[in-house]
Amino acid sequence: MPLVFQAQGVSPGIAMAPAVVLNRHEPEDPARRTAEPAAERVLLASSQVRMRSELTALRDHTLRDLGPIQAEIFDAHLSMVADPELAGLIEAIVDEGWDAPTAVFRACQSFIELLSELEEEGQRSRAEDLRDLRRRWLGLLSGKACSGPTVGTPCILVADDLTPSETAGLDLAFVKGFLTAAGSRTSHASILARSAGLPAATGAGAVLAAVQPGQLVAFDGRTGEVVLDPDAGQQARFLAVQAAEAAERARQKRYAALQTVTADGAHLDLAANIGRVEDVGAVLGNGAEGVGLFRSEFLFLDRDRPPTEDEQTAVYTHVLARLSGRPVVIRTLDIGGDKVLPYLPLDPELNPFLGVRAVRLCLGRPELFRTQIRALLRSSPAGDLRVMVPMVALVEEVAQVRALFAEEAAKLTAAGVPVAKFQLGIMVEIPAAALNARALADVADFFSLGTNDLIQYTMAADRMNDKLTHLYQPLHPSILRLVDLTVQGARARGRWVGVCGEMASDPEAALVLLGLGVDELSLSAAGIPAMRELLSRVDRSRAAATAHLALGMGTAAEVLTLVRSRHPELQKEDQGEAP
Ligand code: PEP
Ligand code: MG
Image (tube, rainbow, N blue to C red):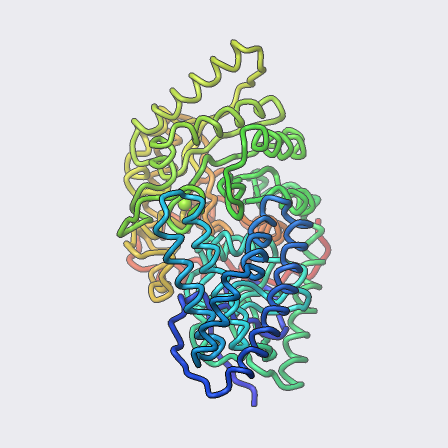
């Protein structure tokens, strides 16, 4: 019997494949007795064999796709599975009359406690590895995959939550999409899914409760519709939508070769948001007029130590060179909030999104920041570099960052390393920055509106909280007024303004942003041709009049009705030839 659910689509596309259920909750002691220790020993032996083959496959895939450092973790897990002391303790517990999962849980627990008490950090991190291994092992014994998709078969990942690191580490050869209970359109796992073209939906708690591992799941990452065990008719419907979307993308692709020009002949830059070097192909393929946001922190995820200065220099130089003189906005590290690094322990905070994040963290960790600064400076001759500082609240923060850049540039120049001119701008994503835009425009070369955070901070609604998605309202007049203030502040000092939050990819919102006078929209590369097509039909002065009316309204719903009623081009399905 098919079961239909409604989740929130956060990354478009159709996915249909068997489910792999990822359960990261810390397991509890099953505390189950057995009358048949011999049967439990057989179960244990076969689970050990399967663990070894699963871990070996994971290690080999990771080695091939990500490199030896990332693969080390699975070597560590493999040696733990083979550890005679651990195996001996597990067997002893079974001999006392406990079942296999109880024995695995308790044996691992005693080693975890032992390792956790040791002073040395390396030993404590072995305790973490052992916890990970235990989750996987218990999952295997219970028939659920625990810390990663079953390697080697296409699947849909169903999970409570996915961290940005976990998302970055997914093997896209097999993971066809993911469904999570937590998260939202602007959580970083969703952002990564969109840039990788991976269908995703959040708010899928009910699916998680109902799904069985291996059950066929189909979902639409645009509408959020999820079906467990779809029948033949439903499968055909999903496949028809998939084919129609592919045809529409193929039609719009013709706009990739054009410039972005509005109906009245004005030029606007459509840039792309990227997080990985691999995204550059899509940037060029979709005809972006630059990179409007390179989330450099994604280079720091999914590994066990930060990239070195040389590694970073190579990546930034490569991206600048491939963009052949088109602007590339590289954002300095935005760690904190939902992005945590295993090798950079942060003090626990009650509200990490309001805590030591982004520029606040960088200014408190000068070595980490100076390494990135030097890499950026060394890459500057390779193209049109624009460095962007996230989470700026104060003029003083920009001054401090500028001083660090100046110091490092002077050292490099003295050492004979060439450094080229570049712009240093800021993200406007805290309401205080928008309200003080005029003063910030004195110290920043450009602004880029980070509406994902601007909306969460203006609405006081955590962007990760799936119960508050109704408060994510890009068209709310309070947001539009902050955008307007930012543009006015920039104009007064002759600075340019871009928008790199997800708001820039929404057709109605993009039209209002154009009307408010922004110079650049930056979105995921795949969305560029469609947005370029839409903008080619929009008259700028009409959009400006719409935006002016919107600024005087009271609700997002009123703004939406206004925009739709004044701009039939939003509805029009242009099936004709591209100009
Ligand atoms: C934003 O806040 O809008 C933004 C682009 O940055 P991030 O989503 O990475 O916080
Ligand atoms: Mg942000």
